[in-house]
Amino acid sequence: GTQSGRSKKVSLCVVLDQNPRDLALRLEEIKTHVDEIVAIDTGASETAPQIAQLFGAQLVSSSDFPEHKNPWDLAAKMASGDILIRL
Image 1 (cartoon, rainbow, N blue to C red):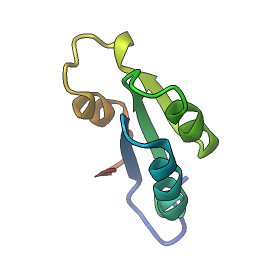
Image 2 (image 1 turned 120 degrees about the horizontal axis):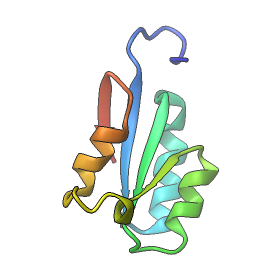
Image 3 (image 1 turned 180 degrees about the vertical axis):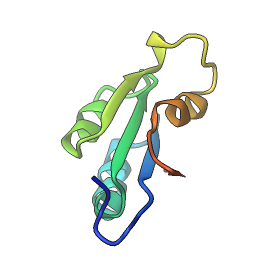
C-alpha cells in the first residue's frame, strides 16, 4: 500500500551503475518516502544489486530487456507508481 497520508504511489527508480556505498546511503535516506524501489541492474557493479535488494528493491536485469537501450526507460516501464523519482 501507499505510505500513510499519501493518495498517490511513489516509485523510486535506480540504475545500478553507481558507487555501492553511495547507493546504500541514498536508499537509507529515501526508503521511508517511497512505496517501491525499482532497480535496474546494468551489470556494472557486482555488489550494487545485493545492496538494492537489502532495501526491498524490485531488481530488473537490463540484459533481459535488450529492446530498452536506456535503462531509465526500462525503470519507468517497470515502476507502478503514479509519481516516479530518479536516483
